[in-house]
Length: 154
Image (cartoon, rainbow, N blue to C red; front, top):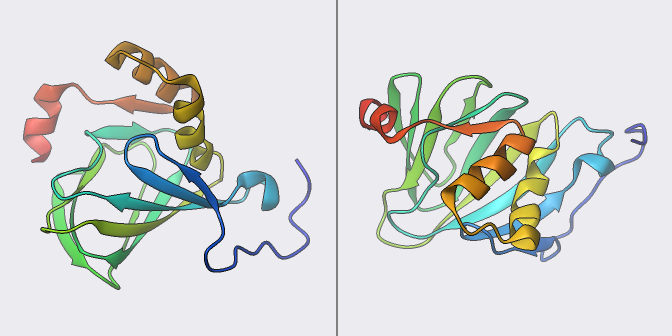
């Protein structure tokens, strides 16, 4: 990977769309930042969000661009609206959900970078079963917490 020694920019309206698990726009890839971070935007429908999961490789930073979101992490629950931010540590089960009545939008930064490539990879590979999704997620250092664990985080 090239050293991060030049500016990385993503002008308004630019980015690579990825339609896996909702709509995502990949704004910066780890390859453009020397691996230091990746960034994407997520457009999340009401009531949607990922199941409880754990990232082993990266921290995540979320900024709500539009809408209202609930975040569950390490037994804590926090609701955020446009302009709100939250940073989630690696290795800790977490999830989020659009708790509003309209599509919401998030800016997500992962550090170090790499996870931003998950959504284009899912779109490319088209896993058909939960086991196939879990195997692909595992390649990115992500594991899903069984449904019983989700009840405790709800």
